[in-house]
Length: 202
Image 1: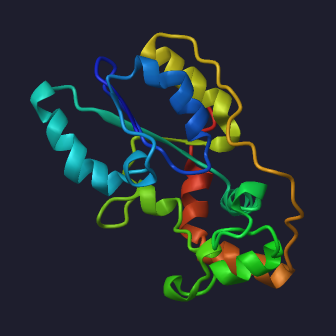
Image 2 (image 1 turned 180 degrees about the horizontal axis):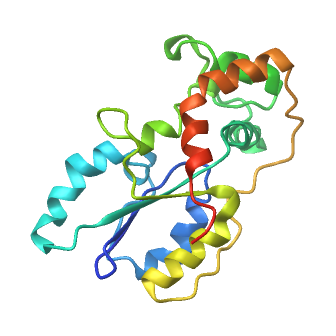
């Protein structure tokens, strides 16, 4: 999470949506930077409102606006699968190096408590909704429209932005049986609603 005082911007960090590159490019310009440990870096909207926003209240108006990125949901899962297939995780319970994407997807569809460690992931929508389940982030951009986000942030922060490539995952076969894909799309329907409504222009 990056917080910029003058432009009143809070950039939420949704995993596997280019947040590492954004952090590297923008952290020097932010007054408050929450990073390194996942439970700190990836605070969701509800946690931001409960823990961080009260700390900003003494700064007065205008209110801070939240910004986030969402990735096409199946591509988000594919990115996690590839990321956990890297050599450095082999032998770790989170490793997907020796399982198929079909198996990974089937395990992700299980109840959370029954999933193997490598498939124990939440949903992007969990980070972007309020206590009532409403979409409550002020600006949500598609990952696939990253140039629109960088243009938006460049304008608000009054600085040019160039993003480095970071956390590039190894290539992998990520085909699915049609029935599995249908089930995933149903399970991730809320994520798809948010992704479809997300901004593609500044």
